[in-house]
Length: 293
Ligand code: C2E
Ligand code: MG
Ligand code: MG
Ligand code: MG
Image 1 (tube, rainbow, N blue to C red):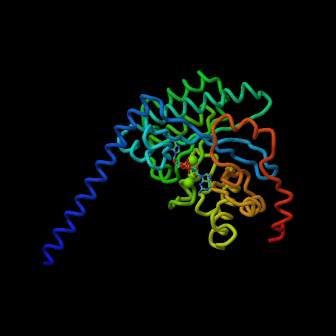
Image 2: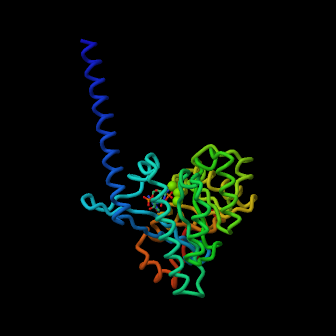
């Protein structure tokens, strides 16, 4: 009987593996069609300077309008795209489209400076053509390279081979900035961090969640902020969902934040109207939540 149970479990396991492989293959072939038929589009999430509520940048985030399943979030297809290599083409499209959009904003609002961060994958950076393509996008769109910042995740940054670091250094030489995304979630080595060509640390949402309730999270965020300050790096907090979190971050010296509290990621045409108003009133918030805590 034990043997039968074992066999049944094995069969179930095989079925699950099979179903997963099938799903992955379906996503892969749908994704191929999506790239061909331009079903991918980009939304932009405002990044807000905490001391005055001004939108100083946006993060470009890809979405997929699937003909049958509706809009699919990147978490459901980026990992597959990475596995099968389609990420190279996908990433190229996102970079082109977001730089085109940034150029459009710069033309519409010549007096307003706006930065843009774009997520890039390890595989994309490892492509031999990556730098050439980046230069091409910069020259075709005419955007100011210093308005562009590429986000690489902390895990990829810390495990990157020397060649990849060299590519990132060449990105810096073009004037484009590098941010470390999801910072704090991996074991980062401080000496490695010191040597990385990155100017911005993006504090992972998981620590922002517990800012008012978990003393441990508050301690982590405050150490990341002092570390960034001491290393001369800028900071962006991600996943700010409440006024209280924003007020705490401001008090702790964080410069810029993004999150549903300010705005969800939105279509490009929703961004322009946000550029002429403050997305929050820091004075009122600090008064409410105390400047003494
Ligand atoms: P990420 O780069 O860390 O992006 C932040 C994610 O948090 C986004 O999810 C954003 O919509 C979400 N978010 C922002 N504010 C809040 C908040 O206040 N609360 C909560 N709960 N979530 C918030 P999204 O758009 O689903 O993207 C997920 C991940 O997919 C991104 O994480 C990034 O790693 C990846 N991704 C997105 N676009 C691209 C892309 O063009 N290329 C690559 N390689 N990866 C991308
Ligand atoms: Mg990101
Ligand atoms: Mg992130
Ligand atoms: Mg994150």
